[in-house]
Image (cartoon, rainbow, N blue to C red; front, side, top):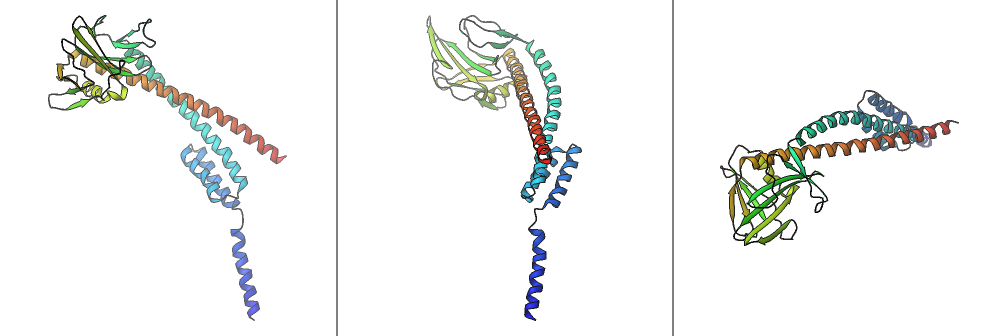
Amino acid sequence: MNMTKYLYLWICSCILLFPACGDGSHEAGEQYEKALKLFEAGQYESARNAIDSIEQLYPKAFKQIREGMLLMCRVKQKESERNLLYIDSVLKVRQAELEAAKKKFRFEKDAKYQTEGNYVYNKLPKQNAITRSQLKVQVTENGQMQLASVYYGSTPLKHSSIRVTLPDKSKAETLAIGYDGANNYRFTDNGKYTEIVTYKDGQCSAVASLIADNTDKAITLTYLGGNRYTLALDRTTREAVKETRNLYTLMRNVDDLTREYQLNIRTLELADKQIMQLEKQQKSKKQ
C-alpha cells in the first residue's frame, strides 16, 4: 500500500516538473508577439523592453530569441529613421538662425600669426594696438567662446582672474589662469604695462551669463589675483557678450545636431547590415 502511495506521488511530481523543464517557447512566443505589436504601433522603447525580457525570462527559447534579435534590429532601424527626420528639420532651423546671427559679427584672422580665426561683434571697435583696459569677447571659428581681460596702465597688476558685480551685489568670477606667457601674458612698452588673460568656455561661463542676462544694468569689472583694479563695463561690451554667447550657443547646437545626425546615419547603416545577415541566417536554417 505504501509503495502504491509513493508511486502515485512520484508520478504527480513528474507531471508538475515536466512543464518547468521545457524551454518556455510558448511563453516566449507570446512575449515576442507582444513586442511585435508594440513595434508595429511605433512604441519602440516598450518594444525594446519586451524583446530584452525574452532572453532574460526564457534563455532556452532559442527560436524566439533569434526572432527577437531581428526585431530589435528593426526597432533600431525605425528609431534611426525617425530621429533623422526630426534632427534634419531642427538642424535646418538652427543653421538658418546661425547664419542670421553671424551677420552681426565680423571674422578676424591674421594669417601670419593665427591658425584659427575669430568672430567679433561688429559694434566693437577694431584695434590694431592696445591702448585701454577693457573686456574683450569673441568666438573662435571652431565654436569656443572666449573672454579676455585686458589691462593697460602705468603700474603692473599681475592679475589672473576677473569678477563682475551687479548693483544688487550679485557677482560671478572666472577661474584663475596662472601666468604662462600664452593665455596669461604681460609685456611693457614705453613705460606702459599691458596684461591679457584669456578665459575659455567653462572658465568664464558664469561671468558671461551674468553679463548677458543683465545688459540693461550697470556692471563693475574687477581684476583679481594681484593689485586690484576696477572699471565699469560699457553698454556696447555688455551687448557684445550677450550676442556672442548667442552665437556660441547656436554654433554648439549646430555641431551637436550634426554629430547626432551622423551617429544615427551610422546606426541605421549597421541595423540594415545586421537585418540582412540575420535574414540570411534564417533562410539557411529553413532550407
